Length: 216
Image 1: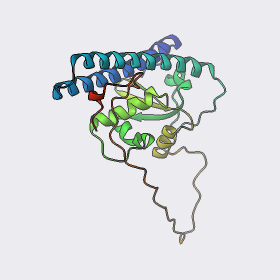
Image 2: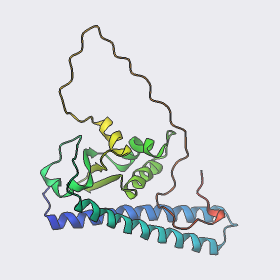
Image 3: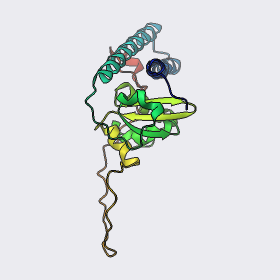
Image 4: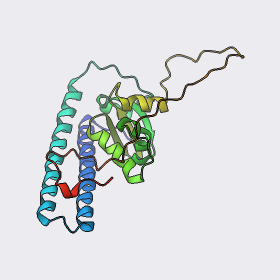
């Protein structure tokens, strides 16, 4: 991976946010048209209203991400605790949060991060991708794809940050040497309430029409 100039990094950061917003809007529109196709009672007027609502919400999300970029760039007092050392070539993305290394895909990332949306049931591959997109649009996660690698950052001390850190624990001090007869007992984590798979991750600015409620 070749180092980026500061200007190129800023353009890449904006482009990445736009890619995620467009992908989320595409997923939202697909849900709208899929619902209209299988439910003849949905009127053309309903489809128009839902498309308009999805587009408007997408614009709101894009503006929120733009505002977040400015806020993060202006905050130089954050102390970062990466779980993977941040390479020099990624230094212009330092403000995006704690760095957690490279993952294979958004699908893998969404599967790891589903507890952040209180989802414990199995998810389809597309739903796992939607989990990662949702967290990106909320500002808890930021990903950067380059040369076939998915670099992952998380907002410090967020649920996403803690989940990723548990995958790749931060090395601060050397591990303690335990007596040979000492047995560690790890209590199981409490189960979270089950929830349905996430809809396409665009926060709607106005409610979708009754007939086009997101399927379970």
